[in-house]
Amino acid sequence: MTLRYAQLQALQPELVLLLQGARLQQVREPAPRQYQLDFYQPGQQQDTVQRHSLLLDLSQGQSWLLLQPQSQPGQPRPSGWCMLLRKHLLNQTLQQITLATDDRLLQLHFSQNTSLILELSGRHANLFLNDAAGQVLGAAHRDASVRRLQTGLPYCPPSPPPPRTARDPLQLSNLTADGARSAALWQHYQQQRQQTRQQQQVQALLRGLQQELSRLEQRLQQAWADLTRGEAAEDWQMQGELLRAAFGRVSPGQSEVQVPDYYQPGAPLRRIALDPAKDLAGNIQRCFQQVRRCERAAAYALEQLPRLEAAQTEKQNQQSQLLDWQTQLRAGPLPAAAMAELQLLWQAANPAPTTSQRSTPQSDRQVAWHFTSRAGESIWVGKTDRDNQTLLRQAKSSDFWLHLRHGSSAHVLVPSAKKQQPDNETLLDAATLALVHSSAYRPPFEGLTVEIWIARVHQLRRPKGAKPGQVQVLPGARTLQLRFEPERLQRLQASRC
Image (cartoon, rainbow, N blue to C red; front, top):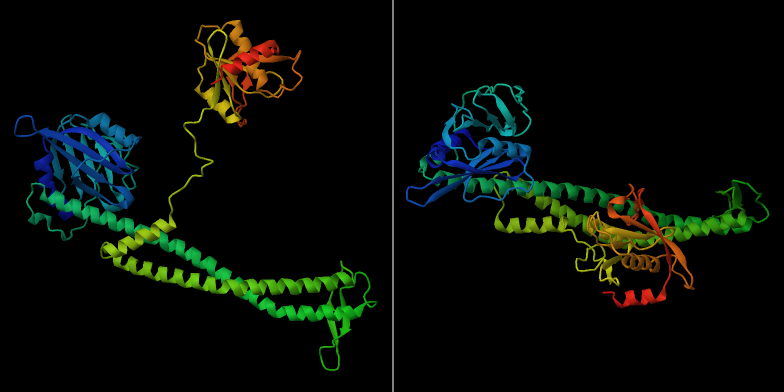
């Protein structure tokens, strides 16, 4: 549903009364292809301001222009078209509102000779911003008409439509042009939006039901096929029993054998196919395996058939109900009871996403241990690989980073200013912590000497596709020869928090 010309013709005098002379305060984008112009103008009484919100809805191939009761919040990232309107129209006064003859073409003329042209012509609806010379500054979306209007070219109005009788089911012209027409149109707009949303939900549910019914039909066919396999179990049983009497009559690689069929009168010869890759004992075993498989398949199918048929009946009933609702929605929104039932079906088909407890980030979890050096400075040590990555992401580029040079270890950070250098005792304490939380920390510890990387955070790079916590040390970093001291470690462990 879109705005009719008769409705637009009845709405235009009311827009002139309420908006003409008002100043454009804000341009928002509540949803894609929905644009909101917030106007204000001083009232007749002192210290009073009248505010009006004009909504332009071009979404889903529709075209609506109406005053809404209250302003809606905009998207956090408005489109380029919204930013263009803000650039050229904010704080300008709306001086004139004109409507073309017999066409849904409305023009909003502003104080700096800029104009906003609203082409509300169904699925080709569009908005154009023109400058004082009548050239196009931009459009809401790409022009789909045969005119192919582009930025910088003169604006060319569309061809006039053929003569037709103007119809207005709402009879807006019978209402007073003091806001009553906009209120009636807003209520009609809300009903149409609700009807459109219900139609989309019904169509989506029908598509999902059709897929489920197709899958159920396939499973039913497979169940019936497995049920008929139970009849073949008796024949496989007979073949296995008859092959037991064929010992000494089957050569290696033989593909078939003829044996007397003792289950038939006169015991005629029966031809039984063999697997050439198996000997006679293997073929006998294959026959009895097929017996068990056929019996299991038949038993499972016999168990599943009632459930599958009940599910198919339930889905078919839902499909019939949805088709009835689809027919009702052509005339108007669904009743309250049907609407509630539709919402239950929609929520069942589209459950809210749930995140597992394992994947939920724990904001109160500490990602690093905190130690205090002999000089009273802070030292941070990452707990896991992902904690190391988080620690580096939160660090400043001037902080010092320490890590075991040959082997894996935790990332150790010493906060530092840009032109500040920690004292040697703090670096030795941090290097000791890097050793303790590394793969090289193995008993015995007496006389253990290792090399420790020392670099600023800006001297690190994370390779593309690297694992969490893995970094690359750029040229310019230095190393430290560290000898393990048990007394230093005991003092640091006492300061951990």
